[in-house]
Image (spheres, rainbow, N blue to C red):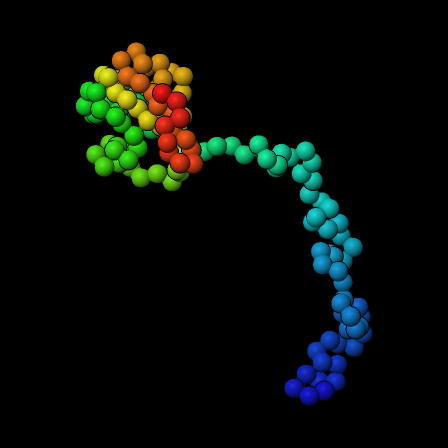
Length: 141
């Protein structure tokens, strides 16, 4: 009765919301089909281990054209030279760009290569070195 709420404490005279205890359960919509029952279930959605897609930072072959012949090229070197911009993702993949790949005798280090990018690098006398995703060490040349 205190605190200026009146005799019924702001709950009105009668009704379900005036009774003691929790008035209705969470998600209850007054008899209308609740939202959690109207929406479809995520049945069979792959959520466990092995079902996450690896997102790569994409490096195009055109960005490697400015590199000197016989040098080793990786993302850090391209970032210093200004050939590429900063990346949101920590692992890098070399893909074929729109322009032709003209650099010769490059050793390219990345976490992944597309088949066509690997073929283009090796056709110009270069080598592809695959890096380990966690440590950045050379796994396979």
